[in-house]
Image (spheres, one colour):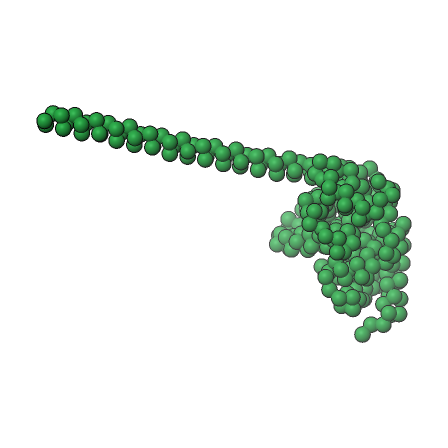
Length: 111
Length: 192
């Protein structure tokens, strides 16, 4: 089991190494529970932030466009199906009425 | 916006996104630079770090509604970042060595062309030590000393107990010191 003192001693040593090289946080003490304060942002930081915001906005547009496209395709397909069913039904009706008419004519002829 | 806490910004994001990105931009302004630097240390490549950082914040953008606030926003964010970096490392492990070298060369070119500040991030002795550490140790050391998370926050990110975190971090610290001292000895031998 590691004692708190052992851990903290080693922790402080490594923190010093990071600080020496400037790889650690300067403004916020490591281990503090404080909220992260915004550091001075470089131009490169701002560029990256802008890229993320643009990408996020674009992802929303893309998501909506895709769902709109699928909805449109869905509506188109269902309307086509309805039209097909309607056309089939009307063709059947026409055929059956023609057949009835022919049947009637045949009966008249036979009589 | 500066005066608002992270929790207040998250609450605003929940009601305002995706139409208004002001609060989201403020969260980015506060956390992105450090998240990016942490990714850079964990992944060792500008390209991978930028990609991982972008993906993590896009996930925040799309999933912030699902964030229930049971942990701090920072912990939730770093859990996303941590998992994203693990995924990237796994993907990279599958790449061929030659390809990795090529990527590294291109990346080094990009660093020297684009951002001189980043050069230090990827060429210093600390970076050299981190690059030699195993994935898990590297991530733990980065979370503690680059991201500045407390032991409790790391435990929350890893979703393990405090004593287990302390044990793992202690081992990672020992590994760090061992490699750091080896590098020192090597440098002295070269000079001698």
